[in-house]
Every structure is written in C-alpha cells, then in structure tokens.
Image (cartoon, rainbow, N blue to C red):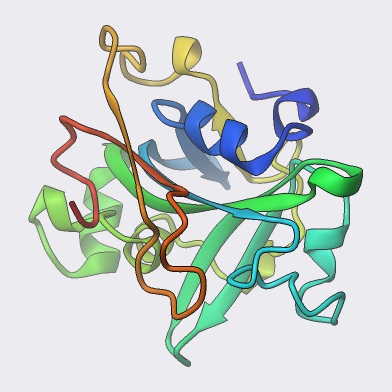
Amino acid sequence: MILPRSFYERDAITVATGLLGCCLVHREDGFVTAGRIVETEAYLQGDPAAHSFRGRTPRTSVLFGPPGHAYVYFVYGMHWCMNVVTGTGEDRGAVLLRALEPVEGIPAMEERRKTKELRLLCSGPARLAQALAITGEFNGSSLLTGPLRIVSKDHSPVDGTRGTEEIVQTTRVGISKAQDKPYRFYLKRSQHVSRR
C-alpha cells in the first residue's frame, strides 16, 4: 500500500520515525529499484538547518507546497539528495532520507554506484539517490502518484516489520547549524545506516 497523504500531513519528527521500515520505490518504464528506509533526519519549520528557514525561493518552493511530495536538491555541486515534504500550517517540515537497505533492482544499483558492496549502495543520502536514479527532475513530484512512491511496512517487497526494531534517536550529521538537535533516527540493527 502506498502511504496516503494523511501520513505526510503530520509533523516531521513523527513522519521521520514512521518512515523507518517502509520502502522507497522508483518505478519507471516497467523497471523497479527499491530500498527499505533505515535512516532519516527531520527538519522542522523555523529550524535554522532547514532549507525553508530563509523563506520561499525558487529552489525551496516545494517545501511550502502540499505534503507528500519529493523535495530533491543538489548539494556540494555534485550530489542529489531527497526529502519528503511534511506537515501543514505551522507544522511544515521535511524529512531527509539518509539511508536505505537495497531490496529490489540491486544489479542496477551496483552499476550506477560502481560497487558490488551491498552496504555501500544506499548508505547515505547521495548514495541512495544515485542508486535509485533520483535527480532534480523528480523535485516536486507526488509520492502518491509519481514514479517515486513510499510503500508501507506491511506491503513492502520484504518483511518490513521484522519484529519490533529498536529506533535510535540522535543528533543530525553533515550540517553546520543546529547540529545539537536530536532529529536523526535509524534502525539500530541495520548494517546500512550511513553513520552510527
């Protein structure tokens, strides 16, 4: 089952934890690559580290639109990263997808990433974007009807629940502002997390 809009209408922290164990699926021209979400980072409205902090710009306009859309941006002049837009009104935010466990279309991921080491295919926001061929063309696309969709834990290509998995909550990484905020979440036993 594709996650409904109501899932994304909640605050970023709730969505960030709720996404763990779900699967991000890229389906295009009958070809599928997919990964189980094992690490996320929340960015809240008014958060100095959030791209929306300085207000709406052509680059960030997606963050001010409806929840349940992809916000894809270019970083360091070389990498794409994907967020999901969350919340409404005063609870607007975004969740960065930081790491996936590859589950479908692995040979294509290996070719795109130029490695056969499974752990390195999607362990980081830029790596997962490259592995699933996510680029700026998907910025603003609906996660309900577009080629990128997120499938609930109960309907993922693998056993998404895998029992009760412990979630680690810790500080965000790779940012220069609000580093102390404990808004990063990951599945404790996953070998595909970008950083412990």
